[in-house]
Length: 336
Ligand SMILES: [Zn+2]
Image (cartoon, rainbow, N blue to C red; front, side):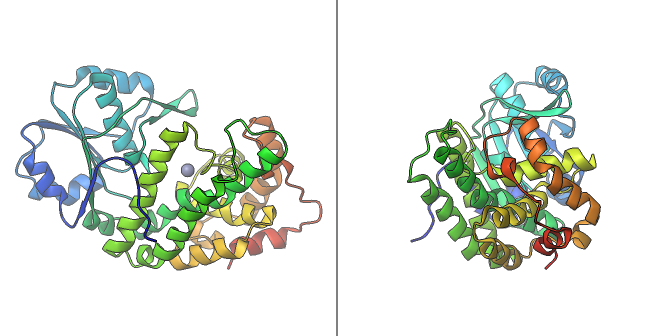
């Protein structure tokens, strides 16, 4: 059975971004330097104003929204461009169109904006674009890891549902677990496995299928009103890594690393995760990711206490017992 996604209206194609931009009567463009540089020379119909996205504090975004003319808002770029455009649309009720330039995040398919507030991330808003335009050529112009890391927030479903089941089995489920729930995640993972080589080679088919997965996940987050099916121990590892090291790396790669580690510690088909990562060509070794052995080991060893302290959802990460696991074993899970 082919995978059929639900979610925002979406059009796919090659080199469609320029035509889309030239087709608006009047618009403000929310973008970033790299994607704009790619299309700038071919866009005859220049935007009335160009806003470079980056700052995501609510104060900044509210001021920006208030200063916008009454016109169409177009987002072109990665997560911050999508999130900024969504916020303006939501605050001002202006028509919104999104042109993602990377498949590394699902921001173009989710309703809320990820705000940076008081040192943390907070999700707010409710935006639905008129259309999401996915231009494969934009993706192919991006650095390769920005594309192959796109599997992270789909792969995370592998460990997330396992945690959810674990929580339900221990009377700690707040989200209405049913025995049907794994089917959702397993369907995503099967489709990801199948399209992974196409992601690796950045074919139209591979990229479209990855985006369709992200589209459906975005839709389901809204439908379920939670992200329990795609967020668990692997994301908690990512947050612990950021806390322990005081820095971050590409979200999709960090979550991929978390899924590899936690699938093993959950006793949940680590080999399958490894297979998908290899098929998609996603970077995962410490050398590729420029992470030191100490950063990885410290993050894993502090995960259980960190996730309890942060009161994350009940998960395997909370009970991670590493007394009999030596550092080499942890390294082996990543360095293959
Ligand atoms: Zn994520």
